Length: 390
Image (cartoon, rainbow, N blue to C red; front, side, top):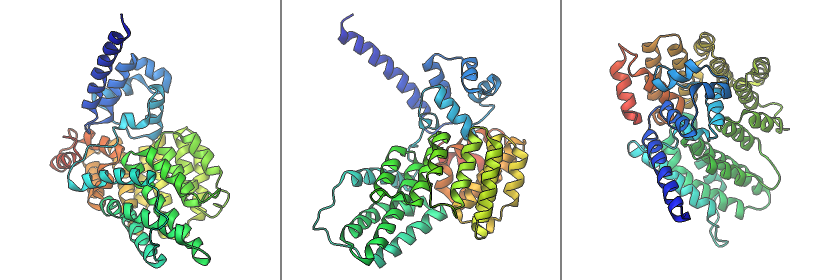
């Protein structure tokens, strides 16, 4: 067969496969993409089970809709076995659903353009006081889980931070560098949650000043590596933080990474360290939320639910509270309490709407609960509609 014909034949076959995958990528559950890629790779459930350590019955139930994905370690294992990026299974970034989601998605275009745009030397500088106030406002939106306001602020804010550092000299330069790091980390976090993980990594690399690795950059890099399904790399990154002896976030994140690879004693030790380093009610509550997430990663739904109930929700901002409620919902669902799980999800969406709807595990749980709820059936259907799952 001439090479042109071979190319056309292989191209048409690839088109059919990608069309199949595209149809599953329109916001549905992870199981649909898993099934399409498993068939594409020519694997059986037993093949996947032997390559991942997961039970064939679980995999069959996942594809049949009897199961759902709620553990990072399992998702990472499946992606590795199928030679995929985790995003190929989660379907991120998701098609826009509503004007606010579309606006948040658009920020990726603007930030990509910013990454390749070279600031003119003649551009005017920025007052550090103004930049600091704008950065604090963006940080408040991030803590609240308000993706829309954060996305609207970021492109101009990153440009302003670049100009401020370029123009700063003397005593003001250190403050300009710090603000620029904070702004870039906020942008990387949003891109990570949207699913633009390559852009997030580029933004974090850009945030460094010379050979320095600021602690906020390292923390966000560990989050990114966990979301990429690379817990071993996340742990190695966390160990590089020489100036983090008083920080609670890195040990809490490292505990999640250890749980992903099945190292429970190491995870518990790291959680104890994080508990010791927490300095106020908010940090202590976030560590308890991390304990709940680690227990869920081990598959101990009862323990996860206990920790979720023990956390002080009043001490948490919108993003932290939404994340805790998602863990609580997953734990309730695993114990067969679908209506209680649905109620937690609805509460989480009310706190931080887009933050919840764009979270892969939340979307998978919503899809699983649609046919399992009674009292909360209408609320779950409406949530699924808003998330683009129906």
